[in-house]
Amino acid sequence: MLTAKKRGNVWRIEGVVNRRYIRLSLGTRDERHAARLKTQLQDALLLGSECTLWPELKKHIPAATFEFFASIVGWQEKSELPAPTWAELVRDFTARFRRQVLQGERSEATWKRYALTCESFSVFLEERGISRLEDITRRVAEDFKAWKLAKSLAHKHSRNGQGLRLDVAILHGIFSFAIEMDVLTRNPIKSEGTPGRKSDGGAQPFNFEELKRLRQFAGKDLLSFLLLRHTGLRGFDATDLRWADIDLKDRMLSRLTHKRGKQVWIPLHTELLFALEAEFAKRNPRTGDHVLLNPDTGRPMSRPRLYERMLALGQRAEVTRAHPHRFRDTLAVDMLLKGASPYDVAKTLGDTVQVVEDHYAPYVKELRERTRRIMESPEGIEKEAANCSIIAHQPENKAKLQ
Image (cartoon, rainbow, N blue to C red):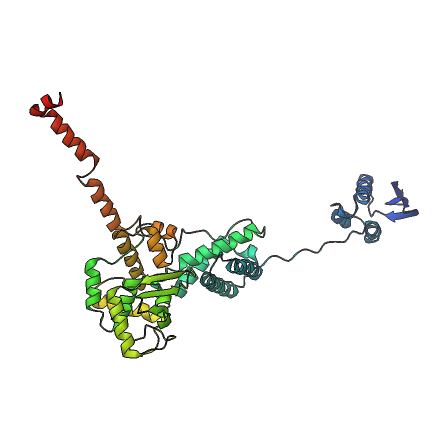
């Protein structure tokens, strides 16, 4: 039992603790304050080291008194954890993403794109002397968007900074992970919609006249044009294609796609087959050699160079936006128009059925017009019903029907 007694001008706490009589100063001249400190000390001793009163008691009683009582229950002041930083968030997010890659939930190609965004954002934060997550505000995020857009537009193949939306989506996902891990309470990156999905379009295939002009002006780029046109391969897969991936005898192309890691088997169109056979006879390549070469240098075609050459081909043919991915859209839409199912298109392109249904089928003008023609066709249920009605109301048939 502890009691508070006044000795001179200062109140002390006295009593027996662990069979030892103690008399220690409370460091106060106020009676009510001394009584309150005595009660708090008794409660803290009763509740032990987990009691939340110890930090407050440390502020109000002399150090010698506090250390004596704190040592009885073994209380130790917990050091404050350092504020979480962007580098730590990237470390933890990377560990989870790598596990998802090993489990087959994410692809290595997707991680490489995430890593580029993380690196870019790290450079931005370093330039501004920011490291703690709590200092990354909405204003900082908006500054990054402007900074990143300026950096992108300075490059030759920036595509007008279209990659910014993907950077924003990636960062939004990383900071959502921080919220999930209770490191943050609010996401500083405001989402700007799904990257790659156009609200006013979707797939943008070439039409018949555009393909005709592109084929006419292809020249030295004919093989690249035919490969993109009849396989729908993404730029990297097209430039990385090897002769080992092509079976001229069985007229088949097989490849593990870079982005999604899916195996695709694409039958070789007759036009593409003839071009490949001519190229093979001309070069007599080894199985590990690249299929596409830069016509100007004879070296393997790079992805940026392929993009550049297709745009140049489009300028010669007076076809706007003749970038490689439009050929992928063209093949997908062409297959759908010819009666292929979304499953067939997905297997050919190495996409999912959901992607095909979301990206190609709903937005393509040709498909909408085909649906319109089907719905407005005079054939169908109402035609037969109308004919039956006309026959039934003819005078010479009424007697027969009766």
